[in-house]
Amino acid sequence: MATMKSITASGSRLGQLKRLALVLAKNIDSCEDARLLPQLAKQYRDTIREIEEMEGAPSDDDEVSAILAQRQQDGKPGAVRTHRSGVPEH
Image 1 (cartoon, one colour):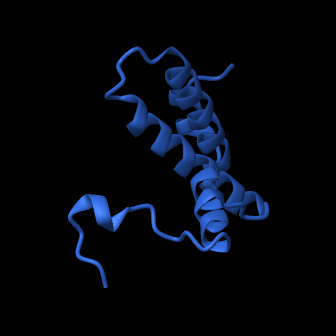
Image 2 (image 1 turned 180 degrees about the vertical axis):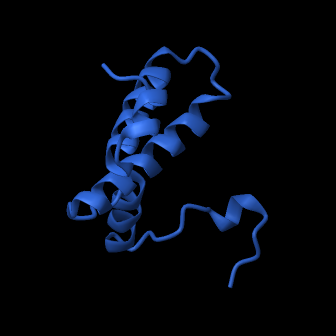
């Protein structure tokens, strides 16, 4: 498999992003520091989204967006329980 350095020097932007996604996935799988995992996961999601945009893939919402949409349909749009959080009710 080609290295990030060689792909960056000679590859296309799409090739660079695909390689970056592989590197990020490997780092996520081997991550032992829970503080780094959210940053790696966010970068991975952003990279995958950019790859899909370049390839013209349909833009699917992530899992969190699907959950929020389901809550909206169920009539429970807010994740914050105002009666327990100190948030003033409207």
